[in-house]
Length: 295
Ligand SMILES: NC(=O)C1=CN([C@@H]2O[C@H](COP(=O)(O)OP(=O)(O)OC[C@H]3O[C@@H](n4cnc5c(N)ncnc54)[C@H](O)[C@@H]3O)[C@@H](O)[C@H]2O)C=CC1
Ligand SMILES: O=C(O)C(=O)Cc1ccc(O)cc1
View 1 (spheres, rainbow, N blue to C red):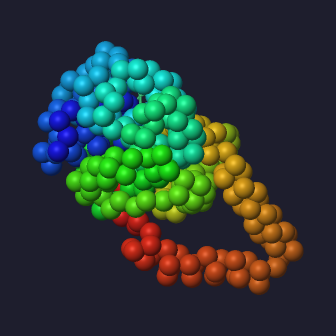
View 2: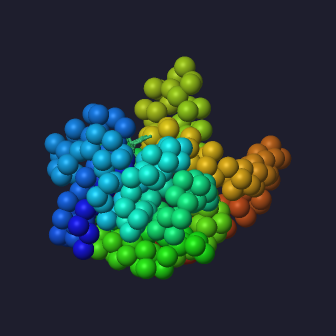
């Protein structure tokens, strides 16, 4: 049971945690802070938070648990603003999509209190953002990864694990580097590809005509290009090397496909497409392996 939860960044991710814990009776009071006054007032009006704080200092001052769910590029400034105001026994956690950069920022900001910081990442979300996008069941039957480091207090990790379990999520622990390379492949690269494809088509003079004939496959692939630009800029810059490595591999693959089309090498295309289909139909459809639930 959490007495006071402070949520810094009351958007989709922070707001959904607040709503979920409130719906389970797992928290007495949620105090929220977002940089935008509009977001704070909206979160309050929607009942996502019980109280809106006017500053980060006010939000964290009496909190038992602080959840930071701002775009990754804002994390280090938020941590610095919190560090002098947080209770020494409070536990801090976050929902950032890549972990190494956030951990570095937390280590720098929190000093001796860094042991109280439990890095986390809910592998659940949608392409929508802001307090109105938050919903109580977002994390149900989804995975949450925690990436504690050697300094992290195991008791803090256990408390955050329990908090996420109360939302209905399944919690895993993972090494930081492993998390960042895995998520670059399954989440960050696909978003970059979707932004590029949709942006490319949007610049065409005949864009409306092209989209009129889009089928379900285009809708599926393009949904994530509706995600927030600031959030994805920060993820790309915050997980730079892992994404660059994958882009390099991706270029090599797409170049080979391009060459095969030029050469009319149908056998190569069959080989690549059939291998992907087999993987998608077998391993990628296994619910124990991949989350196929609708967002
Ligand atoms: N959207 C998604 O599907 C997922 C997002 N994440 C991560 O969760 C974090 C939050 O993402 P969302 O909730 O989707 O974003 P969001 O845009 O819905 O909410 C972010 C909130 O942070 C506030 N904010 C921005 N800069 C701030 C600052 N400097 N100080 C205080 N508040 C600030 C905004 O006003 C907004 O209310 C990001 O780090 C993202 O990488 C993790 C999993 C899924
Ligand atoms: O909308 C989708 O399909 C997503 O992929 C949501 C998402 C976005 C960022 C994350 O770090 C985790 C999940």
